Image (cartoon, rainbow, N blue to C red; front, side):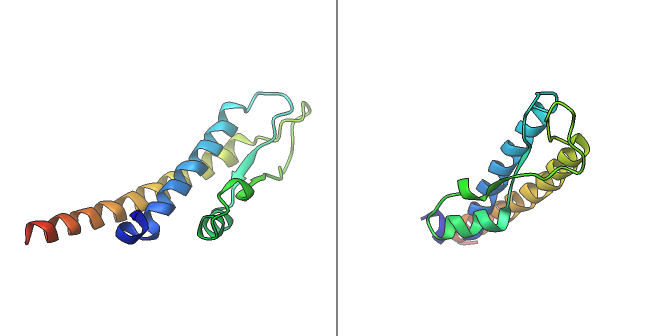
Length: 111
């Protein structure tokens, strides 16, 4: 029912939230030996949700430019940039949803 009311905006918001969780995990484990950085491929995740397959197949290991000697592949600058970009996209998706809710509320009130 949410897709009928809110379209892909609700799905995009949920996927942006999931990507934020993955990126936050990378940042939190920047000093953990052998930790492998991952990222969510947004297009693959959107296709997976559309096909009813879920998003787990869209989470992929990030290929580092230069991995650490302890086997950790988190590059903090890369993760922080991806997190900031994703936060902006999350906010845009949220704005679209807020606009749709406002429009529906006006229609319900007869404005």
